Amino acid sequence: MECKVDIQASAVETTKSNVSKKVIVREGDACHLPINDSCIDVIVTNLPWDIQIRSENIRNLYYMFLCEALRVLKENGRMILLTDKIDILRQVCQELNVGIKELAQISLHGLHPYVFSINMY
Image (cartoon, rainbow, N blue to C red; front, side, top):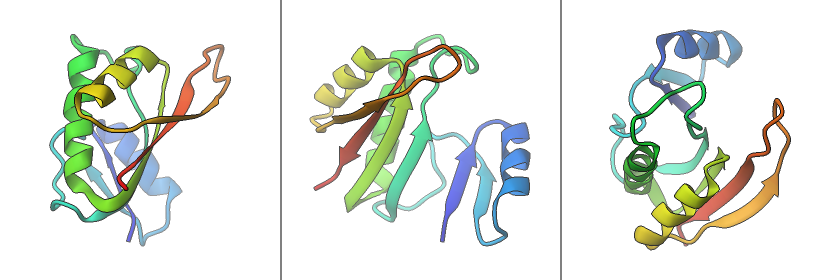
């Protein structure tokens, strides 16, 4: 079963119209997921870059999200993350003692974010 969560109601509705009926789409906060511990195989996300979604403390947002993601990921789970806040992501991963691997840099609307992988094994 696949589940998608977004804090913005408009994004939830757009996602619902673009995915199979088998996909569960919920409105929610990625820092407080309505999901049991250790039950998710893979998380794929485009982390906020403080452009479309503003945060007073983007570093704290990344920290809270990663703590929650680590809670819900299975022991052998994996995260794929897209962000241009490279230094912040690396610092937070170091604080949480989580290994991170840079997979690729892409070009997206004039920006050059990176795709990262975090593996739980």
